Structures are given as structure tokens and as C-alpha cells.
Length: 497
Image 1 (cartoon, rainbow, N blue to C red):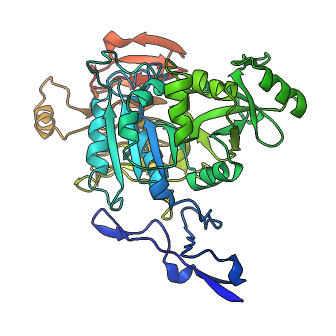
Image 2 (cartoon, rainbow, N blue to C red):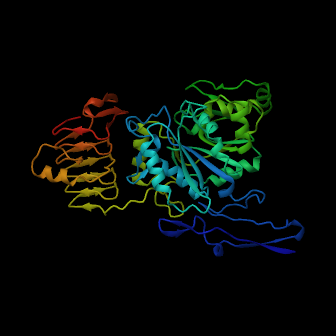
Image 3 (cartoon, one colour):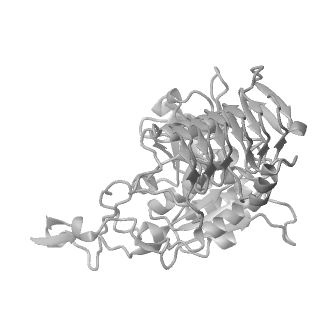
């Protein structure tokens, strides 16, 4: 008998000027396991990693995950449901929880899962997102081979069109993605709110021998269709059909192959699951699908994944039962912020030291609060809050809330700059409205986008209970009964909405 000592061998990763390791110290996670010498392969090294929870023993025949997996994040889309917040920015760049952007959640999931090769594809309204990603993560210590690389849509002499969809974008950039000898690609939407240890997903993918593994949620647990594909899953987690399920109707498979029909007959109809838009794809399977089987496919969810089943590839489902919000509309975004404010999302919070959420380090002064009453709210960095009342709200960075303001159940996204000169002019009784919330204003159940100028004695509370409506010319819209004031809008004094 010999003893194999399992330890942890991970380089220290410098983050924000400090030494931070996404895994715990090896001295605290060593175990001795007696093994027969015949079980040991020469030069065999076992790793035990610790992301959100201690891993099981990984397959020794795969390289470490930070060497063998690359993430592909899509930060935007043509059919955003978060308008008007996406009028001048992409989905992934939308601020959330006072200090963060939505894309930070997905990038942080990758880093906390030790996936440090990250490609971010951007196209629509991408200036803000490109700037944030390049500034936030270029100096973040991701190890010798780690990176967050922004791949913006481009035209070339061979193809003068922009990206036509997620699959088209990946196909046209395979020459970049193939630079590193990874074994799998992890495809991720860049604007969903959830916490997932991708190591568990990748382990399930490898142990099943699948070509593609799709993260999915049981249809019975979902109140609405997330629009990312309906999966028919057999008892052994095999995905036997992918299609669309109309509300109250039966599934309409996107494929019609005899092999799939036979598989469904043998295994039964299976259970229904909604795709989360999260996929692990073998490198060689990805290349074959995009280059040879479906060279003109534009989208993964509606074309590539159903086609993979059609050509006989093994597609599996990874059942995820944790919190997941796909930010399908303004209502979902609003309620997610309200839940974050109360820190009541099961399995997800921004205060987890073992799985922190990273973002752009900013050199902002501390907030200044003068004689304010604040309850059950989140206050971002650098805010100036005067004699006011704030209840059940999220106040973003650099917000300026003036005297006698009342804010309830609202999201104030803050500002990009201080405008001290405007504040000074305002104190001199000039007519110009500065950035922020003016004196004596009342705001309830509203979203105030960045750099908005709310005048004095303004009342925003949807007095007529309007559910849907657009008043772009006046600087606001209604969506799901929630008033959203546009970025940079000016709401004059004494306005009632």
C-alpha cells in the first residue's frame, strides 16, 4: 500500500493590489488516501479545488480548468426587452445593485470557477460595455495565461456584414478562439443574474461524454418562457428534442429526424425544461457544427443546438435549481434590484467573500449623508445625500439627493460625474436643473437612469396607473406600471407623472 496525498496547488492571483486566491490554502485541504501502487499512473497529479464549495476529485486526464476551458460571453442582443435602459447601452452594461454592471455577474462567475480565458463578444450599443470590460478586467490578476478579451463586431473583405447572431459571431472569430488549446468552450449570456459554479457543469459534461451540455431549469418551476429554447429531456438527462413550447400548447420540435423519434419512443416523452442559454461545447464539436454541418446558421438556440441532435451528436441537460433571473423585461430587472436590496435571494448575494463579484475599481470619495432617514436601501459610492427620506430603494454611485426629497421603492442609477458648478448655480436661484433629484421631489416605484436631471417639487408616482406607454419626447416611459426616466432626461420643476 502507498499513500497518495491530495493537496491544492494554485498560484496566488493578485487582485486589486492584494494577493487573492480563488481557492483556499493547501494546508487546510489535504487528505491522505491509501491506494494500491498499481492504481497510480506515473507522473499523475491530482488537484482539489475550492470555488463556492470543495470540488470532488476531477478527472486527472483533463488539464486544470483554467487551461482547458474558455468562456464566450455575449454582452448584447438585437431583441433586448430592457428598453429604454438599452437605448444607449447594451444589456450587459446596465447598472445593477448600485455599484455593478450586469456583465460583472457572469465574468465573476467565471473567475470564481477558475475560468480565466474569457472572450466577450459585443456589437449593439457596445461603447459603454467595451469601455467597462477593458477598464475593469485588464489589470485584474488572472494568472499568466488569463485574460478578458473584448471582440467587437467587425467587417472584413471576405465578409462585409456585421454579426448576424451568436453562432455567426463565433464562426467568424474561430481564428481567434482557436489560438489556445482548450478542450471546451463555455457559452454564456452576459446579462443574466445568477450564481453558478461552472466547475460542476463542466464536470457533468465530461463525465457524461457529451458533445454539448445545456444548463436548464424544469419548466414547472418557471412562470414564463425565457425564450431560449424548450428541451425534452429523457430520464438519463439526454436532450432528445429542442424546440419552442407555446403558452398552453404542446412542444414544437425544431428537428424531425428518425433517430430522434426512435430515441423518444424508447425513452418516453421525457420531461420539459427551459434552456438557460448556457452551453458547454467540445472544441471539435463546435468547429464541425459551425464550419461543416451548419455553415450558414446564425443562432445557437434555434439552429445549432437542434442541428447537433439532428446529426447525431450527444446533447445532455444539466439541471440547475438555483436562483436565476434572465432579465427578460423591465419588471424583472426592477424586482431583481428590490430583492438584492433585501439580500433575500436564496444562494445569491453580493457579500459572499468566497465568491465575490468583481467590477471596475473606482477612486471615489465616501458617501456624504446629512440628516437623512434611510431604511432598507443600498447606497452606492460617492453619493451626496441631504436632508431627505429614502426607503426600500437602490441609490447608484454619485447620486445627488437634495433636501426634502422622498424616494420609495425606486432605483436611482446615479451619475457619471459630479456637477459641482451646476449645484452652485442652483443655489444661486438660476433656472438650470443640475444632475440629481431636486428639492421637494417625490419618487415612488420608478427607475431613474443615469445623469437624469429631476427638477424641484417633481412627483413621479404613476398617478394614472399607466401600464404601458412611451413619452420619449418628455423623457420617460411606462413599462409594467413602472416609470422609467431616460438617461440624461430633464424633468422640469413641478412636473407630475
